[in-house]
Figure 1 (cartoon, rainbow, N blue to C red):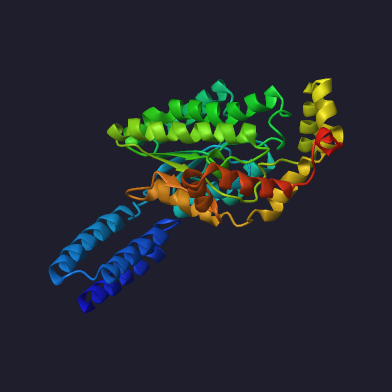
Figure 2: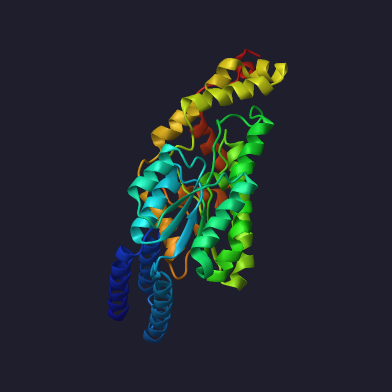
Length: 375
């Protein structure tokens, strides 16, 4: 028993030391692994011979795990980030530039305030590229500029971050244009950018990192268009991870929880979405739901923003780990409750999930007009 306790303390000490050096989720997983083995020692009360075998096995597994979490040197590795005008992409561009990466930032508006802010604050290693991910010609032009600069080095990492949310509303209310736009940006845009830059990633045996969402794995009312597009991106990432492994390219998908970014858009954009919804509804659907109910949907956005975290550093740390670790994880879920909710969806009965989902959605307030009428 004393041998087991000693080994547990040593392994725990190693784990804690490395946890401080590991960005994102890596540190927590190391501590969890050490605790698991320590608990196994104490609970099983194994004989001396079996304890030694378990001890050696745990040392081997911990050594293998920790060696995989070692961060590779930056060496001015080139990284392309899409959607750098604001939000995660904007913050990540600054963060990776500070670490010494050669950063290419694709923006929707190269003359906008976000692009100008990056040019003003970041080093000369950072290049701002005009790249609407739904425009094949802009993707092609950005590819030419990246190739011109990286030449034979290849591109070390591609971070597909560009995304839109639209106005949350019942799936029946969202016009087809809303579904198509979400798929065009969140899924087809990421796929087209990936296909364009994969030859450069294969040359460097680098990284493909796709920014999905917790909503891509957790069904949430009023996010039918957004969630469907992010679920498609998550599955695309999983398939590409298997296919690209033979080329030495590692693929990770980030599924953040609630963080406060500009993805929800402005009040003017919300008003435009509301008008678009009302213009596309048939008279009977508009009668059943009621205009007042439709206009209340923006309250859901306000609720999301009040619950979301303004500190995006957990997302940045996980992306850094995916880009830099010797053995990055296939999935990351930064943010409060993100990993727990993904596990709840995977393992809990559907009735339990739907119960909590309805409780959460009821906080947004409002019921369709037809459901408020007496029978």
